[in-house]
Image (tube, rainbow, N blue to C red; front, side, top):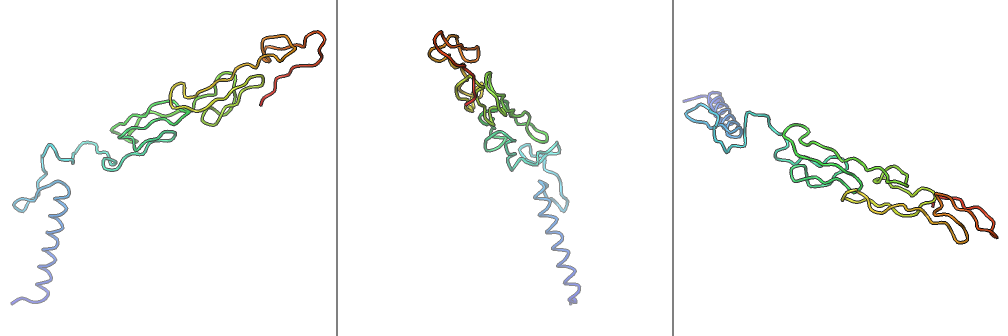
Length: 171
């Protein structure tokens, strides 16, 4: 016969062995003849080499880019240029997406923030995902009726018999 204390000690030992066995299986080890050995299965997902902690959860696309995750590909947002590539070390991607500057004859915080045509020019600049990462242009406004010159930015003067001044304004 055994005492209640002896039975409790045996149960704790059994539980301890079960916990160790479960942990060794989870770590890719195989309990065998009472000793745990590391599995050398070449198809095993466990390795002693540097390990990507994000292997099972995708690394999100970085700022100014869009996609399901770095592993499936990230594309720079409209108005940004660059390239994002997956790497094996932290932060698990290389590259950036940079905002494109406003094109000639326009001004602003860059294409992503918006560009407005300079005074004397007319047009619209819109964001795009294809190079040059914007569409549209700002073209010089031609001189108005009854004036001489090529365009407002290059200067216009009133013809004989007319008075006034042609000034460039931003719209």
